[in-house]
Image (cartoon, rainbow, N blue to C red):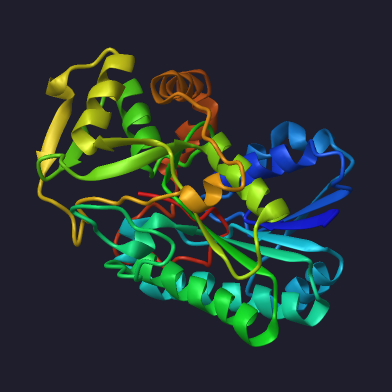
Length: 340
């Protein structure tokens, strides 16, 4: 797998993964395919363009001819490209189905025709649905509750069907909530950080009791590379090991880092189908040698500091014409498969 095609490689998680894989001595070529919609930014790749191993293609995963030509030239595919924001899926579910399901089918179909060595499909813990108690294993049923999660669950099933039917060497990763620099400010950590930096208030849904597991993007990318190299075709790997917080507990930490108090917080009615808790086991990945390394509080402080020092990267997005609001028509995205 010396030549790797990375879809959605200009998104948050995808760009971190590209920078990581470029450092591998046994990787001779990395090609990023990204549509550069609202959450994919060429700037996210930054210094990666100094590497002669990196190529960038501006295009869409629904472009069958383009996908076929690119997959033919590569020995492995790592598929991040997706519509990924829960709130957007409430009013643009068709775009999520189109990109996440049909886009995945387009890619894995090309992988079948050209006999790639490995196809890693990047998914989410949200496909398991809410778990008030206990934790989901890779064998747990899929019970998504929102259009985003349903589209990811469907894409997982499509990808895995190509393993069972055609023998395509598919592996699926399902990650907890990621955080770190370069994340689009629609997601809760950068959203709260950028609002507080501008002296604005932040909002908590309900009573702020929704539980999420937070995993640094570097740990997630290390796990995805491990699955790319060592994962068994036809297997699913949960990527956990982060830190569980309620949204209120997370907000408390962000307030402290940004010198704000609870007067900056407004409580608003809960959003539609806001799952109370996600939780996964990750013992299968641990058998491959995976261990998360990043300390949450230290990494959160580093992440907040990145947004403090890089206002030029996120301030223009505050005026993005594709901001989430009813009535907006969304083009298929090529970002990462992650997280609200």
